[in-house]
Image 1 (cartoon, rainbow, N blue to C red):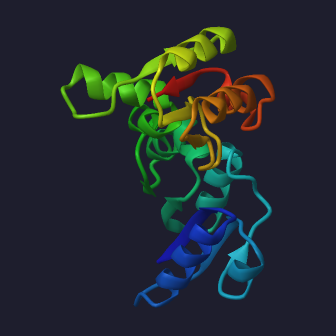
Image 2: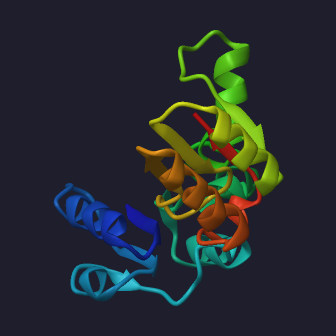
Length: 185
């Protein structure tokens, strides 16, 4: 059985390493992979967001299972696209991946379904977010709404730290486009 692992970080290296120990495994491809995966699998220069290229790789190499590491291709619907192409792909579909891809969606989903979660407010304007922070009590948690490569959360123990966090996320765009909206808990 040939396996494709999508991604290029430590998580993908750990997946490749574990899969090498499974009986019945043929070739392991990692796209794009890294120096560690290169030692135990075949790295392929295809970006995780090149879904068409990944589907073609899977078809051309008789891949039986694709495992997706990074959140961005999951949010982009890679599992749905592989399924439509008749290929097995492990991970949540586009709709389920929204829980990871948008903190606002996740918080609203939890509130709508009675799932316990911290009180929160959502802002797309930095001045409104700062006004909310000025009225609140710490500690506060400020989260970039979108994907931020696992780094879009700042725990602020003081009001000053919270105001700085809003600036970093929404004004300075420390986490890229993922900080266009914030959740403040």
